[in-house]
View 1: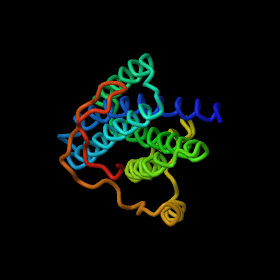
View 2 (view 1 turned 180 degrees about the vertical axis):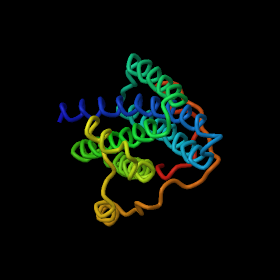
View 3 (view 1 turned 60 degrees about the vertical axis):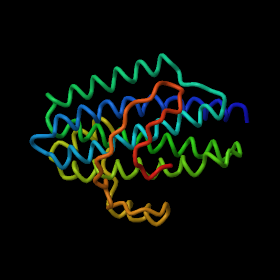
Length: 211
């Protein structure tokens, strides 16, 4: 059980830092799209807000476990997020969209693993929120997947980087299992969020499907 607890803490610490990187990357990504693709820019702003909300909730989970984020990883992932956000201005349309879909797929796996570990440890209060965040990250992945599906560069990117959009048939089957509409995508919202300091609960709570 102690090994499972350590794994859960490490996964939550990784998720907390990863959400920081994702939020900063999405901020730059949205800004780079404002003129040519304003609808996509707005949707990505909504996704950014959800990432800040997830980060707030993961910080609370770590605090409940008596743990804190890993400062070095926070600094590293924050720098990585800013770098990739800046790169969106010069890397064309497909690259950032594909990278975002791949990132969201990784997030889905993180929260699924954390949910399984929390269930094993009997941390029942955490399970619903971890499941909700897993489902929301799946929606984000589906949004980017639908954008890049059929793009001529997708086969090469999938060969080199390993992620490709989930087949529509598989998504429909998944929707029956987890109870969400995989074609729903991202709902419009003007909600924005500001980052919270590492390990604090923060007072900003952007609108999100997760608690």
